[in-house]
Image (cartoon, rainbow, N blue to C red; front, side, top):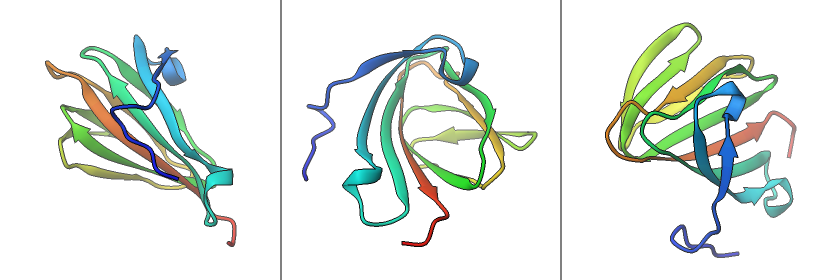
Length: 118
């Protein structure tokens, strides 16, 4: 399977995890597209002023890769600045959220992995 980020259809996704505003989103890969514990890879664009609300996960892990832009990532009670090139690991049972407080779109890959044996 080969996909191009410039060609994937993006859908509006409003108030993600009770966040602010409308994000643009595409699921690039899902569980059935991989032979490992990968649950999905999402490509998400947060326009300035939007957010993914703070939310708690179960026994899974999400990894965020900031492709472009800048913002703030909330991780288990602490807020960190993030920018192009930042990689953020949201541990199992952790709470996290992301805010675009920059002047341009915040483009992100989100990888979610389960803890099931492969």
